[in-house]
Image (cartoon, rainbow, N blue to C red; front, side, top):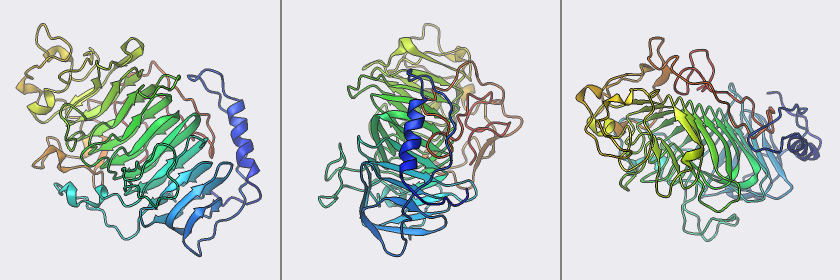
Length: 464
């Protein structure tokens, strides 16, 4: 991305109004529009640490320090150009009442993190001493007035700190003494775009969507949640897509949809072509966590997901029940090294319907099986249907399935001989509630892929 010349914040608001005016009335439909490159005013200086109110542009290639809470006021915009590093200190937060846009590129990604911390990506490290779960800053907190949050090619690391009494900008829903989410979005009429980005570490939910139009595609999530918390947790009023994401070592679910919250817009989330590795093992509550989850009146479409050694596979909750009448799913791929894993391919106590298109075919279930029944898996299921990643050994060579909760050093692309290739279902489309736009919207709405999982043999899907 070339540097953006700077003359006025008006163009951001005008662009957003243009995008919204071109959208169809149905939340399930969208019109693609073209908007000129942004014209943003007020370059933000990197000469001194930032705190308090900020607006304008963080310029390409620069490093900024935030040493206390910063706030983007209603009507203001912060845009981060490519190759920018933002270092946070002292449990600071980014409170967004206006608009926040981070537009990194593949060659020059942005980074929002904490300086001086070394990642401990090694098998079997004790989570209690892993800095990924230490919560060093209080996250990106969007108020109900935030109309747009965009994160493209951006690393977001080490969030989840506890809000203190001195946090100057506790946006709606946050309380002193509570753990922060790394990202919070909560405007049912607003748009949240997260694509081609990375999120590493959190204490509770990594991303909490209280409501909003969402486009969450082609991201990598590692070490989300300490002893609980979901990675992507969508509540009432959330509409959109979670697709082509890689989840490694989540505490609870990778993707979750619930209609809890009372918003008149029903939660409707499509979860497709995601890959989930070693999920659910840090969750201390029983019967919870692993990969996909629908509950409490939420609906959606879930196809082509690859679940590998997750504590629980795809869960449809029966009490409080998901909107099963308006759900479609199938062509989901399950792999397990142990009987503990294969016995939860259809989790005990839940109402996930086995589909003939699933891998493995659910014919292994006993005669008379009822949804949620306990069953004894055949020994032949252990290690069967190896998806054949490029560099990730299966069966696992570590002592415990939760020993690997990071992506560093592994390649989760599929080998050409993988049985997951060509087994996907493409007879549906993304909800796509957010228009395509290089700055203010979705760069690309990647439709369902023919290969199961987030990596596609044709080069589409996750780009990490």
